[in-house]
Length: 198
Image (cartoon, rainbow, N blue to C red; front, side, top):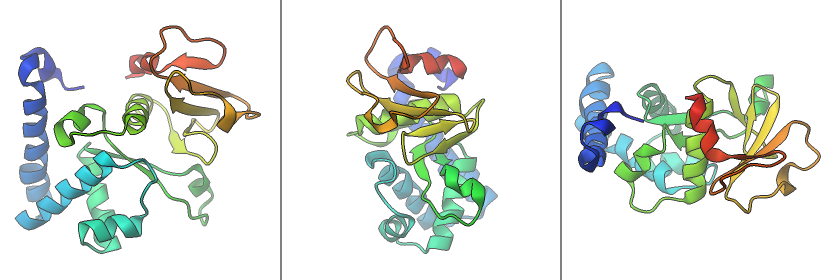
């Protein structure tokens, strides 16, 4: 994800950590006049998202974990999203205004997992990879059936090689993006192929 991977592969994760710290302690701190103690709150938010399943927590719970108000949390999530450390995928029902549904929160890309947390939820890493590759060129929403809706047309469920179509059966234009398969078949597509969209 970051071009300095090719400079020295053995120090790649160290460089990613340095980049995260520069963004938090220098860029965001100066741009938004964030106090040093609040930078730790931003890092805590990233770590919480890193070890959680998407939609596992509510905004209220996340604000409580971080020890901040909901208003401050929304502001901080916006900062992290703008800094490309976090990705917010809104629920497709929000297109209709008054319907209140939870967004999914992901790290901006799968490389950040190695830099931020020791134990990652494999399903979250898969969804993060998918979202980071597809969102660069397409409109992405989360949905109740399946994981993502692309361009308001294609429903995609992301999973491992055993992932089936149970959650998205009977949905038109529905697909499974499966990890750990070499060859796709029918509406089951290799997850790694989505990397070519970036």
